[in-house]
Image 1: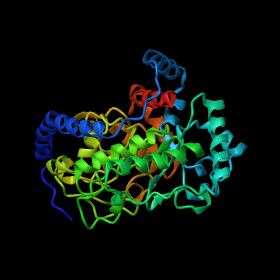
Image 2: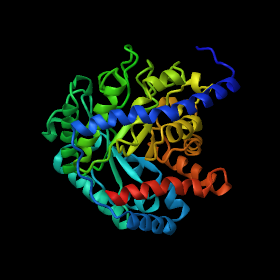
Image 3: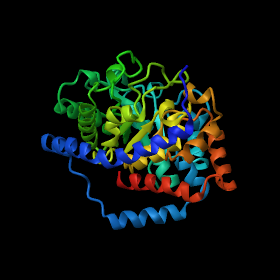
Length: 398
C-alpha cells in the first residue's frame, strides 16, 4: 500500500501544476508535430463543408429523444445484442435490439470473426440495419494494433499481412507503414474505428501488460510514431485511438484483473506519460481511451481515471486541450467490476467527462442508470448533448 497525502494539499499543488503544464505543453507538441509533418506527408482529408456539418449535426441532435442520445454513448459487443452465444452472423433478434437500443457502435473480438467473407457480411448487414433504423452509421470497432493484439492479423484464415509489435519499429516511416497496412485490411472488411495505436510510454521496465505494444520509453518518440501510425489508418478512412490515458506504461498490475495504480506525480506524468496525449489534438487523433488505473499522488484518492473528473475534464480536456471523443477502456474489467455496479460506473464516467462507455458488464443496467440520472437531474441533458454532438459530427464525416 502507499501513503496518501492530504487531499487539500494535493488539490492546491495539482492546480498550480495544471496551469504550468497548460502554458508549456503547446511549445513541446508544436515542435514534435512540425517535425512529423515535414518527414511524413499527411493523407489528404475528405473535404467537408463545416457549415453543412454544423447544421446537420444540430438538426440530428434536435430530432433525437433522450433515450436515443444516451444509447449513442455506448459501444458494446455483438453479444449484447442477442444476450447469447458468440455472434458470427446478424439476425432479426439483433435487428430488433438495434431498434430498441440504438447504440453508437459495436466492438468485435476474435470469436466474432472467422474469415474474410463472414466478417464482411456480418459488418455489412449490421451497418445496413443501423442506417435503416438510426439514419447514422455505427462505429464498427476492433482492437487491431499489430503484434500480440490483432484479432484479424493473428488469424491465419484472413490472409492479411502480419504487422509485428510496435516496440520493434525503428522509424516513423515504419510506423506509418504499419498503420496503413492495418488500415487497408480493416477498410476492406468494413471496419471504421481501430482502438489503436497504443500511446503508452513504457516507463516501467517491469510492465508486461503493455510491454512491446508500446513504441518505447522515449515520450517524444512515442508521440511521433503513434501519430504516424494514426496517419496510416487515416489514409484508409479508419478512425484512430490513442490509449491508455494517462499512461499505462508505469504500472505493474493489469486493470483487466483488478486494481492497478502508479505512484507517479503529476510532474512525473507531465514529463513522460502525458506527452503523447498532449499531442493528440494537433495530431488529429479521433479518440482517446481512458484507462482504469488510479493515480493517487495526483488525485489524492484511488478513483480510476476513467471515472475521474479531475483527470478527464481538468487534465485531458483542460490542460491537454483535447477536443476529440473520449472513450473509457472496457468497463467489464476487474478494476471497475470489483468496485462498482454497471449503472454506478457509467454515471460516474459521464459525469467525469467521457463521451462513450465501452463494454459495460451489464449494458442494460448501465444504460438505464444513465437515463435515470438524466431524468433526475444528476446528469443534465446539456451534458449528454455535448458528447452526442461530438459523436454525430464524427459519424457524418466518415
